[in-house]
Length: 227
Image 1: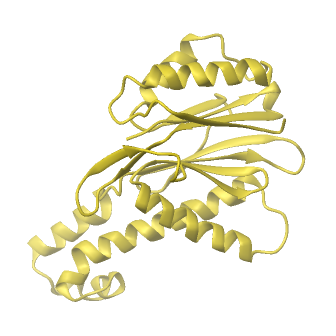
Image 2 (image 1 turned 90 degrees about the horizontal axis):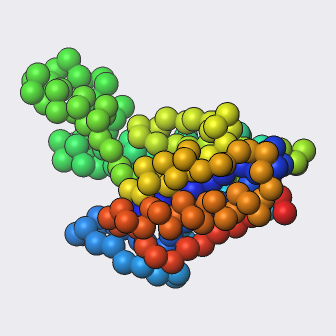
């Protein structure tokens, strides 16, 4: 599935991000391959990035829609405001997938469903409600970057549209290799106060540890924000 890691350094004035280059998708069949030709780390603004784990095709659509909306808004963007927009596009895309898979075959939209819900048989209602609550599009995102004031922040967006800040802990990993990377960083001497060089070495070591997980590629892309 992949590995994406973000970690704060120098008391949150700098940030290190890293990802493998394994691409996973499920249309028309499940497949994965390692390449540097497909993005896993998307540059949203000069100082803010989105790292994607899971279905690369779905992730690309979410990030593309979010970037278009962000580019259309005048003024400066904070990492928080960018994360909020990405979350909105995540939820919107998830609803689109549910509509295509569950509602459109029945000839209705999501708005139609709420209007005619009471007229449907219980089995159909249960199937649709289960899809609305439980359908997982298989995408996990990290939004990480630096505000104009110099402070760096890390957020994740996960099923079904949960947005969380990881500034308190200082690091986060998503993807199939996340447990290995997270346990390494917890077990190491990682602190948010460490130099960016020290944190970068730890992040790269954590990525290396994650390579034992299925779906994590050997190649690595990493960036330092705020250097």
